[in-house]
Length: 162
Image 1 (spheres, rainbow, N blue to C red):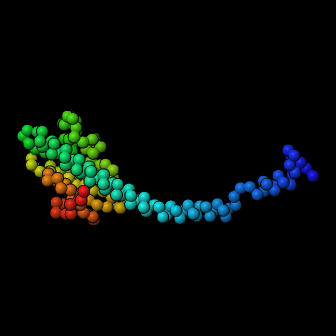
Image 2 (cartoon, helix red, strand yellow):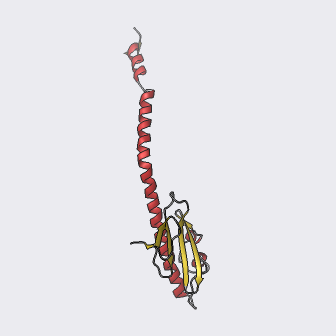
Image 3 (cartoon, rainbow, N blue to C red):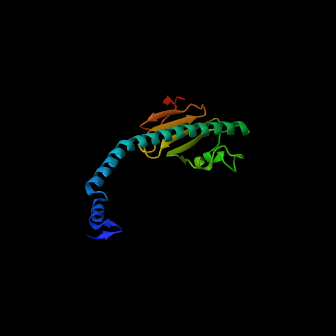
């Protein structure tokens, strides 16, 4: 009988042979992880879409309020010609951040249209429908944000609640 560090050789050999995981055990664990991921992933995507849509509504409200502030502070009264009119150097201090003024933020594209001195229109459309958002938003000088699924929103669509 052989001894290694006061342990019989056959005990060491048996312990080494029984340590570790078998291929079947590893495959079962991987299978369980895949099942959990397939159940959790759609909910995570829906949560992200909801967060992007809420941010788009907040950004529409921010732009609308910024346009009203611009209109009140400029003589003669007029709305800005573009979103860039709401940042430096045109507006000091700036009404919105430069990312939003560029027209893209949190999965939405913001398109501002100067209609005339007394009116404007803003569209917020998802960058990738179904991935970054499902609803389209619209706001004008009246300040009511409307929304629609499946295409661009307009002034006659459903108002956003809240």
